[in-house]
Amino acid sequence: MFCFSCSDEERLTERAFTVKDREKYEMQSSVDLHARLSQVDPKMADRLHPKDKRKIIRFKL
Picture (cartoon, rainbow, N blue to C red):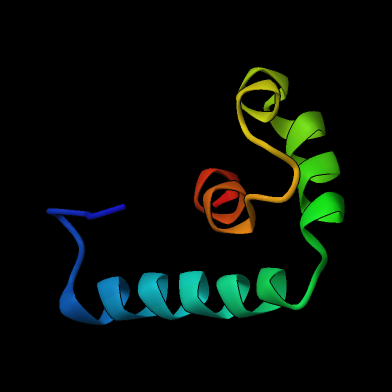
């Protein structure tokens, strides 16, 4: 997410947070991530295959 009104430091902090979360999600199994996505966004979880970890992570964040 890009913030036009944010300072450069705030953008870097936001991006670092996203990278940190992505690394955390990469360590989890795709099936576990899919189960979590189905709690957060059931419609999107229905569209994604439980083994498609890359897309699950993208939509979860």
